[in-house]
Length: 166
Ligand code: HEC
Image (cartoon, rainbow, N blue to C red; front, side):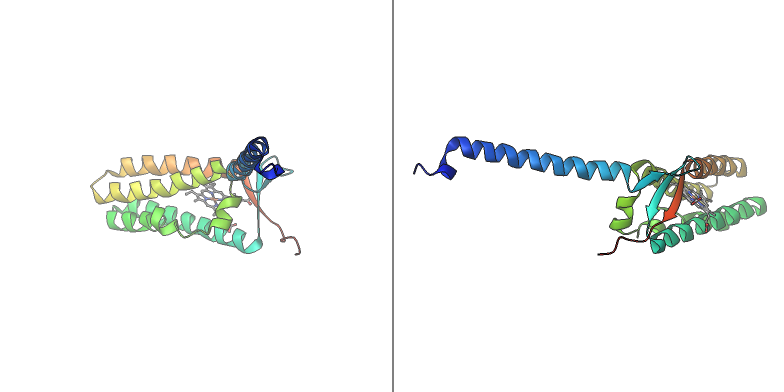
């Protein structure tokens, strides 16, 4: 009794300090979740800073999406809805869901949202093709889809950084 650490005042100060520290930790986590690991690039876009293998992974996925768009357009042209659905589904949400958390943390929130909405729309295009949508309807969705590709490319680029030596 009477020892300083049992003093209710000290206990209160300590718990307030603990809560304050916790809040700072949460705020920092939220900050990085929203901002990702980025800097403003000389061309005015936001550069997402990734390790070179992470950048390669994202770019490989991008080339996959371009291929999807090509096969979808070809399917619409030929009236082959099976081809449209299959190609679109290959770039859908489940096909893209294996991205690791360390990489996700480096992507800014808006980038993640745009990326997710593009994958979702490929699933919607697949479902539409399966359920008898017209070619005009499919082209309209594809056009909306391409606007999102364009919007993201206008705002972001991917720069490779070598991880700091430990
Ligand atoms: C969430 C943002 C985002 C979306 C959505 C997006 N991209 Fe990308 N894409 C990027 C970024 C960033 C790069 C790298 C550009 C750079 O560094 O200049 C890129 C690069 C690419 C590349 C070049 C790949 C390479 O090997 O260099 C292709 C092709 C591509 N995207 C296709 C697409 C297509 C097609 C869509 C839509 C179906 C799409 N992207 C949607 C962000 C996005």
